[in-house]
Amino acid sequence: MGHIINTVAGVAALTALFIPEVAAQSCAGVSGRFQPRMGSGYRVSLLATGLRQPRHIVVDSAGNLLVAEGGAQSVRRLVLRDEGNIVCAQSNTQLSGTNTNHGIALSADGRTLFTSNLASVNAYSYDPATGQVGSGRQIVNGMSNTGTHPTRAIATSKWSPDTILVARGSQSNIDTTTTQTSAGRSMIKTFSISAGTQSTINYNTGGEVLGWGLRNIVGLTEDPAYGGIWSVENQMDDVRLNGRDIHNNNPAERLSYHGILNATTNRYKGLNYGYPSCVPAWDPQNVGINGLVVGSLFKPDSVPNANDCANRMTGRLHFHAHTAPLDVKFTANGTAAYIAFHGSWNRNPADGYRVMRVDFRNGDPVADVSSTTAQIPVMENSNVGGCPNNCFRPVGLAFDAKGRLFVSSDTSGEIYVIYGA
Ligand SMILES: *[C@@H]1O[C@H](CO)[C@@H](O)[C@H](O)[C@H]1NC(C)=O
Ligand SMILES: *[C@@H]1O[C@H](CO)[C@@H](O)[C@H](O)[C@H]1NC(C)=O
Image (spheres, helix red, strand yellow):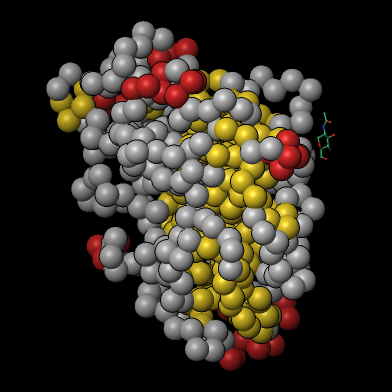
């Protein structure tokens, strides 16, 4: 891995002799169980271990990392320290009183912390200098589910600072009631933060539908340079067509576009993306319908009737079946989006378990909608055969102001830092 030394920034060349030639560097006292395989131009270090199911993460305005620690149902704050060409944690504290199983976001001014759990979105005053959090209040509630999919991805907007986006997935693999918006599931809604602060808003009856027919959105974000809202979706399991099992390579996971929140008119607002009646193809040949390409919607067996799959909104890019994208984040200049794939359980052999990059130009992916080669490797497991129990499983992503990309891995309890993103 000697070439890695040549890719670090100028000043680091002076200290190059002291850089250990391994893929994952460690901060003092932090040693990793895995040696990630890095894509060309990237370097990685391990920031923290021993966390309890770290899920989504954010960097605050003072450069501290806030982690939604699902296993502890609360937020953990890591104060960071630069040590030459590696960033380490100098302290690590639980923010008591916070409540989250996955979702975390900061207001545009960085002074309000939002978290989410199965039933609600909560807001707390937050002081980035001290880590002090105020008492929480529910701003959105009524999101409890009986079945699967307990996460509620949330995102705030710099372009529309009073808006919070809240995603709620289906409550089963094929959630038939989500053919109606009144189900209040398999959708992304927008809520006014100030209205929710005055009086808690019910998810089903309040807010506005940004997009629906989206099976389970686990990550969503705003492109900081162009303002577009993007989501990543986990699609249907065990899909069959005319009695034939086609689930190993279908349907596709999706990256979908939802427009710009402060646009005078957002023509993407309120669109239906097909689920539960229509799902996107990843391997059209295996689906076997004439004229189908990657991303085209088709109706599998055992779903509510639909004769208009061709007219529903499609994703903007598509990914290997069951690779489980759980987060997406953009570089500051909007030239790339990074996507965390948690990895499959519903296919053989297993796939995913990696961080990938998708290149953008003028706010839109460079690759065509039906591309199968849009993903560029960033950080992969060197032994995918060890997954899911003996490998890292990417969940949350966050950039800091210096362009370093933080990655959480829930099952291994780790946070990594990627340099060169
Ligand atoms: C939306 O917000 C961005 C960022 O603040 C701004 O540059 C843009 O002009 C705004 N658009 C509209 C239509 O107000
Ligand atoms: C955008 O930012 C990335 C770093 O995140 C950098 O490598 C790239 O050169 C920048 N591109 C442009 C066009 O500024």
